Image (spheres, one colour):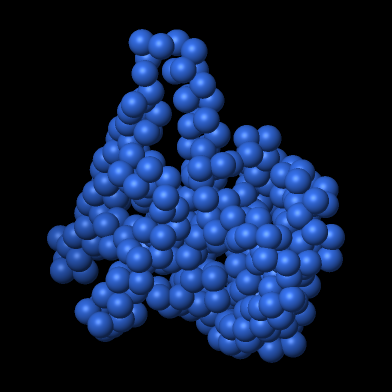
Length: 339
């Protein structure tokens, strides 16, 4: 056997070994998530008291599903966005989705008050959030993507500017808002899994399923996209069209996650990078699966701490933000050569 043939055989064996290792890690994560689900559902659930047991499960099951929805949406959106930008320390938060969400909620309360149907009806609020965030972000970023010659870095810079703009507009409304209304508004501006609306779960799942079906063919091209624009075009990929559709999917995923549970800063950064570090594979199907499972572990762990240690006084988003900030500094200072 020639040296070239030996190298090919070794390379194929190495790739198969990486894939087997990735599948093993994913199965391990699946087992950990299953264990965390059982712990979350049944710890201090008082099964010896059937009525109380059913009541507790009725509260925890919708929360669990919402955490899963947020994990899948944020994990997938972050991994896709990082592959598009070819940078592992950026997140879709730079597109300003959280700022748009906070601005829309503040504007609704400022214009109509906390007694309006938009504030009291969670189903309508979710639908309005999803539609408005999707329309605003899609029109803005689609238009800017065309005008900037499909330059993602310009899109990120403009997203940062728009975040500051929406934040300033929100601050201006808050300054003249009634303190009681602001107090009621504040609870919707922070991700909180303690008071989720189970009725929006079906809509969120259908929205994510629709996004996945819409972008299924484009998602399969992500492995090629990461090779670079020229290589992807040489392999027959309509690069600009695929990037445009994937960016559209990222925006919609972030809209679904934010409208479902509120802004969760740094979660995407944590789970996407941990998925890459643990799996060590280029296959985005594995990476997205891994990021989603890690997101579930992070949110369920944070919810257990919030629920049973701090007795609901500290929201999950606080733990995620602290851990994400520390991890971000770690990536910048320790792993800077890898990014």
